[in-house]
Image (cartoon, rainbow, N blue to C red; front, side, top):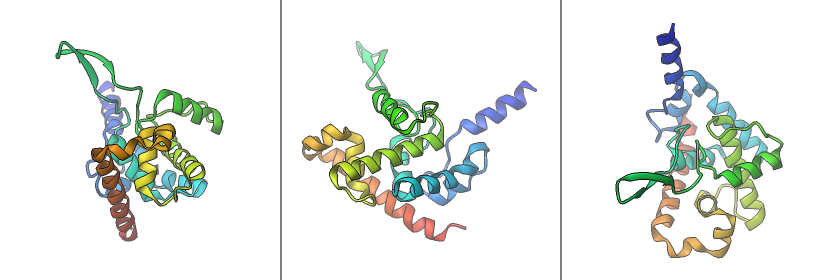
Length: 187
C-alpha cells in the first residue's frame, strides 16, 4: 500500500518531460496535469493575458517544477547557506509579492506549488504590470522584464544595463510565440 501511495505522489510531483511543447505539457495525464489547460484558459479570461505568455513565464521561471527554489549561497565555497531569494514554486514568486497577491485577490489559501494558484498569480502580476506601465498583455518581452526585476526595478530601468537578462526576456518572448503556434495545432 505504501509503495502504491508513494508511487502516485511521486508521479504527481514530476514536471512534464517536454517543456518546450505546450501541447505535450497540457496532454500529460499524471494527476494534476490534466487540468492545466483549463486553468490556463481560466486565467486568460480573468486577466486578459494570453495562455502562451502565461505558460512561457512559468516555463522560464521554474521549468514547470512545483517546488523550484533558487540555489543556496555557499560559505567558504562549499558549505550550503541561505538561498539568494525567497522565490518558490512554479511562479518563483517572492514571499512579499505572494502575500500581496493573496491579500489583493482574497485567495489567502493560495500555494505557490499549486499550478492553478501559480498561473493565476502570473496573470495577476502581468495584468498589474500592464495597468501600471501600459505594457500590452501580449508583450511577453516587457512583461517578463517587469516580472523578473519587479515593478520598482522595471520602473527604474534596471534591466537596461543587463544584456544577459534582456536575452532571457527575448527567449521568453520566443517561447510565447512558439507556444502560440503550437496551440494552433493542439488537439
